[in-house]
Image (cartoon, rainbow, N blue to C red; front, side, top):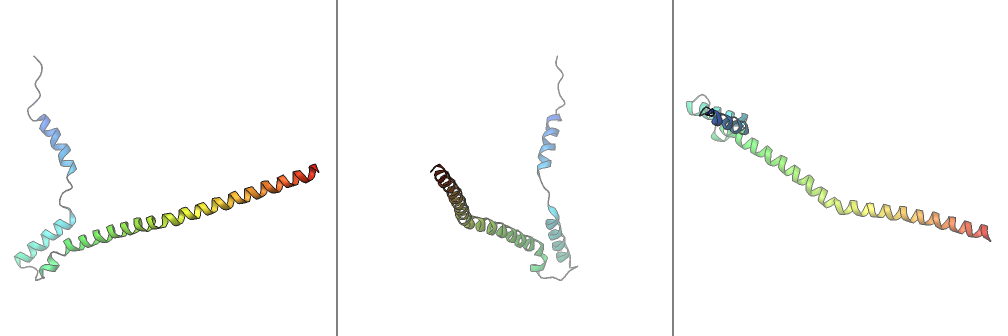
Length: 114
């Protein structure tokens, strides 16, 4: 007979992997719950706008960061053609200088042969 594993061994392994993927409630959630509890019990006399402020402040900061990120991406996308044109112009100038040097050397050799 082969040994039979305990019935919950596989469940415990699955529980370990699934619980590590959840992030929990977080600081903003705890602060919001605390403010709501304090408001409902009468310890604070704030308007609901300020009671829920951790949510909208964190949402506003998230939107600001995402907007800044998108602005940087858009700026880089708009600058790409300018940077490519500048690179082409530099390569053309370098090619022209090399051509002029080779042409001057060729003329010098032709004059030496004469």
